[in-house]
Length: 125
Image (cartoon, rainbow, N blue to C red):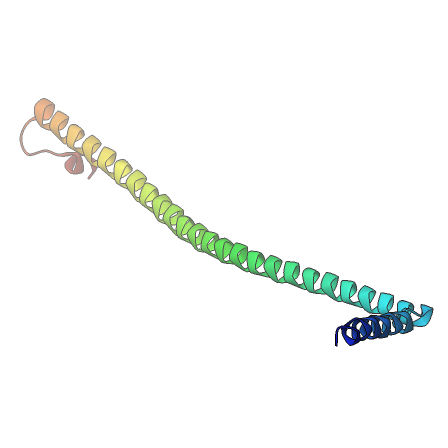
């Protein structure tokens, strides 16, 4: 049996060599190279797709932030409009207060200088 064991090993090794030599023909090498190139090309496409998906996710997050900024801008515009309206109202009130103050001063002046129940209205009529 000891003589048969090395022969079996030699037979297996020669069979492997035969299969190697038969798969290493130029046509098969070209086919294998094309297959490897196709695999590399597929990997590149998948990598590009992954990058595109990541970019899409990032763009979605950016759009959400921009929408929030638009909402904030509208709120600030509303606040600005309200503040402008309040400032206008305050200006009108200040003018009215000055006018009333002037009338009161005139009435006080008339009473002090001309006495009695006379007022600015009585001088106008």
